[in-house]
Length: 213
Image (cartoon, rainbow, N blue to C red; front, side, top):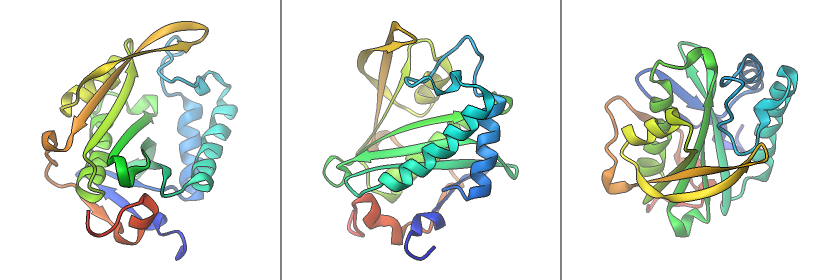
């Protein structure tokens, strides 16, 4: 699509491709959500969307992506990629920025279909958007946050070099829960071998940056 170049943006790693989803990709991502993202007794998300029935989870997944496309502005954007592994859509990895032209700070969020857990995909897909942020967009910092009882997300942050950045208290299912913030600075980031960014240049104004980052 000539007037929405983000659909041509790709981030690639030795095993993965991250891209804005086509309608077929969104159907497959909805299928992953319907199959399950985590054990039912757990809740890793601030908004408990995975408490819904399978069909509801699939629909809300599709609607979320439509909503982020429609709300996008250079001052506030969320870029939710689908993650493709061995030809299958396996989950989603988001990169987000608010007043990025000034702050040079991004945040990230993700989920992965349950049957694809335990293969290192979560670490690799987070590394992919960090590569986009630091090498492609000129970010100075990346942040992440996870509940204290979400060891998988915290382990990914630790592997990628994030450091402690304080705590917050949120409400989850009517109870208080501690959120652990993490931060990664540009000088701590080293892009792994075999990572690439494709089709970024025409997208730069949509992220609020220019060729001079």
